Image 1 (tube, rainbow, N blue to C red):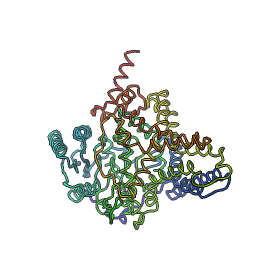
Image 2: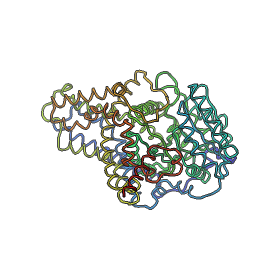
Image 3: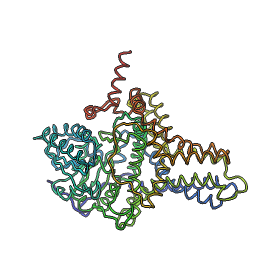
Image 4: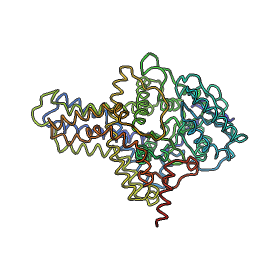
Length: 605
């Protein structure tokens, strides 16, 4: 095993990018702050047709809380688009670390593959691991890697199945790869505690660890590239890959991850350009340098009682800022290359996962005063909180606008309609900017258009995803808002296994989880139509999707719809056009439907 620097004092400084990170960050901050100021000014002008009363000021405050993510996403997209269209190697400009992994230098360091599981489907686990380990076992680097199956499962039947999977994999890869299965009786600290237990028992034996979730799939080449990058630069503490969705036959997952595929590349390129060595860590499909991670990244247990105390749920970004505080760099690789995850197949599963993140991010309130954090790191924690605070702020703005007659008597016009429509168009345009940037990039290159199914299908999929996102956003805003209110009264979401298989959502299940959205949509719609018809059309993008929440959840979970979309190549991603070898062995239904459709098309011509 190779020695690893233990403190930032032993590290040589990184070569300065041009322009320097300080200049990039200052310019980006000025752009974001100027954008927020302009939007607040335009909103104040819109609301001030008859002066600003206390309701207007409350709406301005709520609007201001929604703006940081909107402005940051917009400028990330602009920067990402400029890099994509103006450079042959946009990723290398935004994140020079990608250049380090493009050789075939020998691997002579010890790396652990950590697969963290809790009550997951053992068959899916075996399928994914077999696909990943088969390639590793045939590489020269296999002798330097060891797989750890780290279980926090508490279901006896699942535990027995996990043990059977571990034994089967041990036999299959005997002589080429070593696999260790470990189960904790209690999942103290959740996933972070699971990894910390590994660190205390085996961490000193390894230089690096590649962290994987149960739904993670990475090509052997992608994993070996991460190891080579870490070997090449001792300053790196965490390197995060750009994780994209696996081909899916769920209508919900297909459309959602198509939209994420559009938005993530430009967004991640732009953010990597100014975040630099203070990049994100998403907790999986990433590599960590174990010596500083063990020494500096143990998470505190938050004192007290209530939902924001105890173990930290959203551990990843906290570990990233602690790693950066220790003097090591955290980098993201803005390259779509061999790193996948599975997205929730239904709206209800999506909400459940999001609420767990919401509770975890709210714990960051208690970490903002941690000493020694870099300014960018502290800003990242604030933004992680605002990611979910923006939802109740948006909802409050809508409710104040809708029911202001019940709160205050207004003489004269309530707002200036000409700038009201302008504000709506500007905010929507900025919100969709990351996706628009990638759409422009795809349409500009024939090979990229073909990878998404050709121009007609790509354009149709973009339009479908736009409608999908417009419906999803208000539904999620209400879900976040209701949960945050309940969180204040002690409700928690916990950490449970995700249902990853396609399945129907019956009316009863949808109604029991989405009744609040439906009721609120009906109340707002009826009020506006009856009392303020001039605002009914302007408010329809909010209350309309709420009224559709239940049928939307049922329709997008309908297995037949997803299979039909896969067969027709709607919301198609590049892996469906040219499936990597690592995915072919997974026998994904989306790829099967695509092959059937392609064969049918070929025979008919």
